[in-house]
Length: 363
Image 1 (tube, one colour):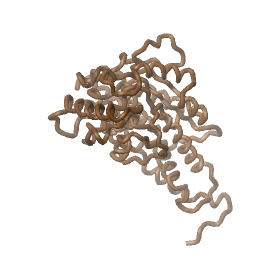
Image 2 (cartoon, rainbow, N blue to C red):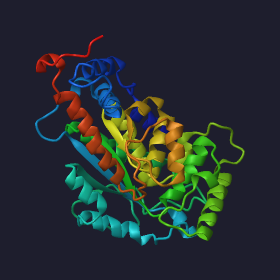
Image 3 (cartoon, rainbow, N blue to C red):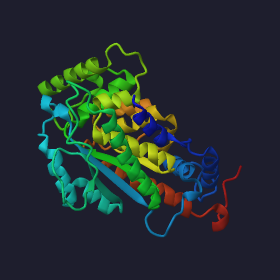
Image 4 (tube, rainbow, N blue to C red):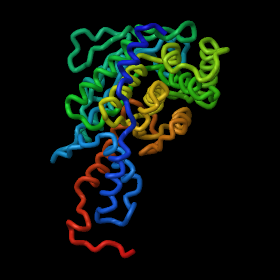
């Protein structure tokens, strides 16, 4: 690890503390005074208490929607040269243009739920010069083929981490309460599978799914490839492996950027709603780098990818939704944001037994 990446991590993790248990207790106490039977809102009460513990006295509830943003990071992967996806590499570029034309699922859901959508080019193998509406933060035109060499250099990894951190800091400065992380990148489920195996020790055949829809033969090739990638980079290494080495060797620029979002958002006391498998791989790396980030994470949903359920269990995160989705783009996270906002509204706007003049339950 170079001094450059060491300095990067020092900057990104500085001042990250767990969410406040004192504020969580205050939230629980208020929830118990609201006009409802104790605990009757179920997980909504847990979610509200978590957000209060994160935001502390920053949880201002305006008359309109609370501040919500989703960041969709797009990047290409060198491993696509090995035929790991049912779709060609060019789809990453094409889908970015679709996002900007407001034609994708994430556009529909972000618009419906009043979530600010930010599309970020952090490593797409295409020229977006002069394209409006896009955050231009390209590190390189895709990662290297991780079957042959490390996916990125330390300098590239630091750059991508800082892209995500910068955007999270901008979200905090803009008064956001919730940020969601999503992605677009053909080949990135292979990267997420390798990260999952390296972090948890789970075998490739358990953590590697069909991605965008591989047939059985292609799926078997993908499982073998993940095993070969792990053997190349980590054979003979003792556990636990360094999360930064995992990210550098088998990650993607969009995964590094999302990791940066989680780290910086935690330092800024923002709640982070995590999307699917790839986003959760990034979140797991952030937790491995700085364990205090775990308390800032809300798992938006559980996808169909087998590795996603394994990662959620590893992180002890209980997803808000389980809709058998596997789209990415931040779609599951944005759907979950509506539930999270509902929990916050109930916490802040319901009457108490005293204010409503309603009798409480007898002892």
